[in-house]
Image (cartoon, rainbow, N blue to C red; front, side, top):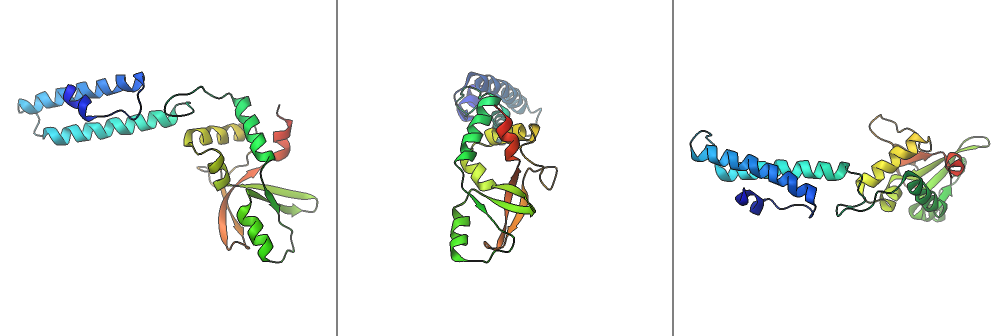
Length: 195
């Protein structure tokens, strides 16, 4: 077991990860003993590497799915606090309004490159608010936090559905940039009603 714990380093020093490593160490010790007695036709080094890879994969999944703010362990942010923080980010965001019959010009292209999202008219008097996926990634670089926020926004119907069931974004063609950009469809009015 010591041979395994010396080999398999923890991704962060947390007691619960240490307990998991101890279980994997017992698995390795059992396999190593079976190899010594000729019961298993494997090599110890390959067995050690394979069990270590399984442990790292399991720990990464657990860390990603835990509601911790960081892998070092922080306090769990409340839903209300998370929504409030997102609201503040959105209030300071730069949105470029795209008119229907606009002409391409350098100023608009420059503004779009620096923007956090766009507002696009759909019908007379109505428009669609789109937040660039890269903007949300910059605001919430941690994947678990970003996933939790998008789930929370979806539950409050602030975030529109993506084109496919497995994503919250949709590819939007912005002619001035000459490419499709992944965006989140937002219902900003709904966000204002949440306190």
